[in-house]
Length: 60
View 1 (cartoon, one colour):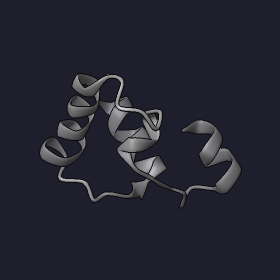
View 2 (cartoon, helix red, strand yellow; view 1 turned 90 degrees about the vertical axis):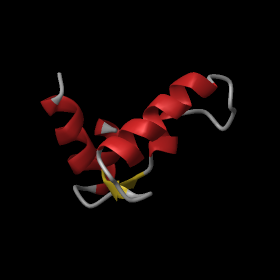
View 3 (cartoon, one colour; view 1 turned 45 degrees about the vertical axis):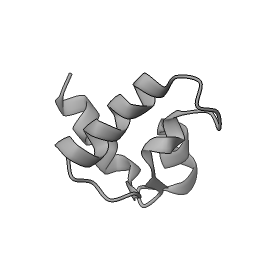
View 4 (cartoon, one colour; view 1 turned 180 degrees about the horizontal axis):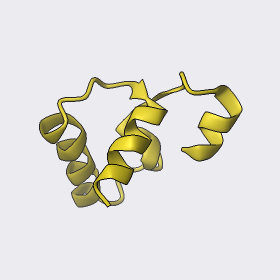
């Protein structure tokens, strides 16, 4: 995520799919990420990468 922000700027969009390969080789983790993204935070499909980074950092 940091590379994308550095390369494309603060307005780069991001989807939770960006954290996964194009394979469904870990469906439990994919569903956990989807739940966090959609149910817990009510995020749209694409969000600003800096917003996601701030959310993640605020939880840890």
